[in-house]
Amino acid sequence: MLLAIDIGNTNTTIGIFDDNSIIKKYSIASDQLKTSDEYGILVYNLLISGGELEKIKSVVISSVVPVLEETVSIAVLKYLKITPYVISHKSKLPVKTDLDEPKEAGADRLANASAAAVLYKLPAIVIDIGTATTFDVIDGNKNFKGGIIAPGPLIQAKSLSKFTSKLPKLRIEAPKNCIGRNTIDAMLSGIVTGHIKMIEGMIEACEKELGEHAQIIGTGGLSNVLFDLMKKDFDYINPDLTLSGLKIIWELNREK
Image (cartoon, rainbow, N blue to C red; front, side, top):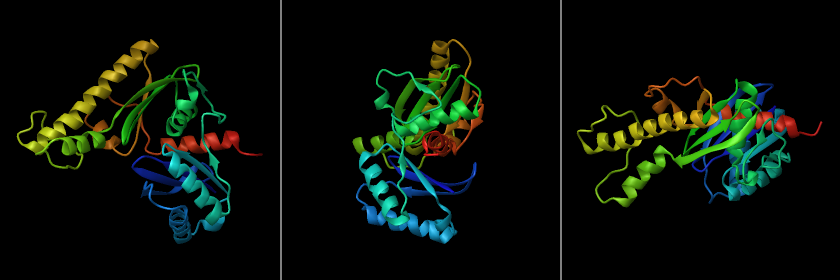
């Protein structure tokens, strides 16, 4: 079995693959204050409780938080006795990174682009709605052309609450109407409806630059909240896209 660990800014997603299927998935907080021992004990106990500890033979990690990349790697080596494979711009990929600075591409975006290129028809645009909302554009020749990075709904909500005196914290959900008749509904409309309009406009702009229609693939923790409200239908919604990309990249780089 393969253990795939995707370390994001807010949450860390852990997936267990048995052949090509994800049989278990966990989500834990990404906490830079946690030690390698704390992460190691946490992952060890998760695997013990699910009965998979002895079955895990390999581990792959992607991270957008450098300090946690090191912390979790040490934890895996110490508690699982496995040297993890850590994804970077130097990894062998099923796409060509056609970027000005390939080393700047986040491991999660490399995973999303790789999964899109292997699992779906190209060209494709992957839209991942998490702490940040990212667009990853892959053309018909499997070139990862780059994309867009924008503040995600959670960042917007926290910013409104932090930098204004009277606006409260809120839970991201579908607004009742575009015109909010109270503070909460007005904030939700600005964040959720505004984000939807941004996504729809960016898709149109990306397809114009590509010169053709692209497959639109949605993923990320807040994908279902937004995608259900969009006028433009997504071709696919795959909540496990990033984990699948980790597995694809690991397979290309593992020692035979």
